[in-house]
Image (cartoon, rainbow, N blue to C red; front, side, top):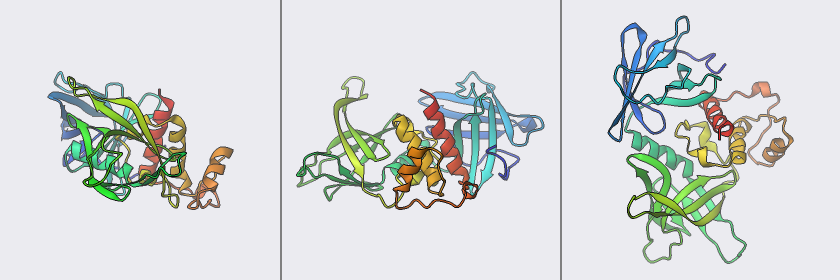
Amino acid sequence: MLCMGVTMQAQVSESGQWYNGWLCYSAKNMAAGKVLMNAMAEGEEHEFMLVPVPGEKDTYRVTDGPHDYVNEYNSVSTVRHMKKDGWDLLCFYNSNNQLTSVMSNEQGEAQDISIAKFKNQLVGEYELVTNDPDDELKLEIQWDQVSVNLELATYKVEDFNGIVLGYITIPPIEGSTNRLEGTWEVIPTKDGIKFYRLRQDEESFLWARDGFNYIFRWAGTGSPRFSYASSCLLNDKKFAKMDKSDLRTMRNEILATHGYRFQSADLQDYFSKKPWYQPAASNDDVKPSLIERLNIELIRAVELND
């Protein structure tokens, strides 16, 4: 079971904010070990209560709060509070014991946390996939800047009412023809990244794809494609738009970084060709971190649900 071996804390911390991937909740410890969780989203209040499960340490069930506010966790069966390796987490499971959501105790505003997580998943060097040998386009996404054929520009992460959408806007580059000028939906793949050009409706201000896209190949072949999945909690679930086959690779790459030997021939063949893959003597020696195990479960949950 995931929680075994984890050092538990008796109370859910009231300090900081509990970030669930798009909102930050505040926690208030109540009588009888209950915890009231509250958040504000677009002028609408969200609220639920964590109620201790008798005889089970740091385990809760979810009930509605004392007010008639939105309870986005009313389908949750069990919540487990765990603290390890500097992480303070609330893990939400459905009736099938499937991890559906994770809250992390964070400092800062939800939008700032979301932007930082999204940027962390974009950073890297990429090359345009094309059949034209003269059509060279090199892309490097840095933390605050993007380089298009070595020309730098500061890009913007787009949001709607504070919710990060997975879109970036690249401005014109002075003195250069910037083919990537505009707003793009960015979706990672196991081989690189896809850019879908977006247009904004003048009345609703909503974004929609205009049918044009670029496919970029990831250039950092000497290290794992999804290395951020070993250090960054993926509770923002930006990977949810990825193809199921890419999600399978992403999930298993976490294990591959520890040398896991796969039963599936296609996975073993795929990772054995990676220069960073070093098979372990035994899978018993493969010990993913808490965050890696949670990310594996979060990715798997998206794979299983349409």
